[in-house]
Image 1 (tube, rainbow over the protein chains, first blue to last red):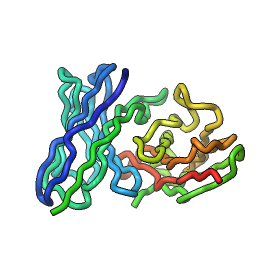
Image 2 (tube, rainbow over the protein chains, first blue to last red):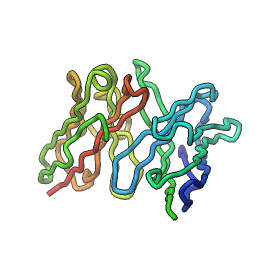
Image 3 (spheres, each protein chain N blue to C red):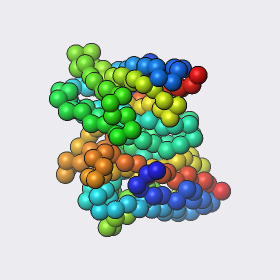
Length: 122
Length: 110
């Protein structure tokens, strides 16, 4: 079965760190750009970061630049998000998703994981 | 706050049709393709439409998408109770150098 499974979420104090993982099965992660999207409780979706197939390019939303680091291990078919200096505003369900390109080269998010909840609170 | 604006909610009776918009600007919708995602209660988002009006395999043709200028529209015909969900538009924003999602529209079947 083709799927993405996130893990690593939990309760962390403000200023703390957490590392999320996303394991792919049923397909080869190294063929795709990969993305993290988050959703605060009761709120909409927010794109967080993405990474090129070989890890050579990484992009972030302004609100996490300098605090979050996206990475991947293609040998392990896995994607990661290292989150440092966490704030209450980072509380959300974090989803990983693969990026597929359409006929004009624009990306869309084809396959999503079920998400992992990160709660930042004292 | 999102740069893509959607109506908070729409509703209709079973079997009826709903359409709702996603309004942006020249830095996003005006110059990039739009995708739509369906999020059923308590579940992860699911790709519903890509490249403005293309449906992934398994998505029924009751769902349709279009784009004109700086706005995109999603339509659902033959509304079913299983269509009750939140729907989000998404595209790339050249000014922000980031993917952006719409504010989301909750579809209710009366």
